[in-house]
Amino acid sequence: MADLPQAEHHIHYVTNFQDLAATPFSGIVNAICWTRDLIGDFSEITKKVELTGNITVVDQEELCQLRLSEQGQLAREILLHDLKALKAHGASPILNVIKRYDQDDAYPFFPTDVYSFHVDRSPIPTDTFLCTYYGESSEILPNSHGKKKVLIPEIRDELKKLYRGAEEGFESFLSEHFFDLHYQAEPDAPIISLGIGHLWKLAVDHPESQVPPCLHRAPREKFGRNRLLLIC
Image (tube, rainbow, N blue to C red):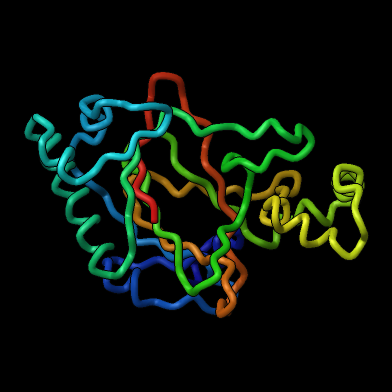
């Protein structure tokens, strides 16, 4: 789109699910967004779901059994519609209520949790779909403003100290521990919020991909404000 800010040239916007699912990635476009203004009280659902830990999977049966206000029911209908549409597309959507994700403290100089900018990888062609209905929203980073952490000299040196193996096995070590999936944002990089209610499709690193995978990360949650996230 000609009127997009420079930082968003890798994003394509659509107005319905059919176009979201059918539009291929091409060129530098590796994120497609179905923009929506949703109605309903999604926060009520996060409060009514019985939490089982920091991340609670909400199955469709439980969702349907929740006793909700009229606004909560409107929100539930949207969730059920999105789940149905994604399943019909062949995806396997999961609805989560998230207090927080586990943080990786095994390597303090290089966390590999979802709060770090990273790409998704798959051995088969696939896409990542996600939508934040309530709470803090996920973020993406233009590929031109992110650098693979394993290529940053001081980080690479630390990883080599950690590895301590034969040189020919170093790249496999990086892949096996998912170090090669993570990126560092440039200073003052244009970090883009995915917003609330919009359904996104992000490019994944897979053997047949024609575009760079989309750099994204989970937000830092606010205490007492659980996220409602659909992802697949």
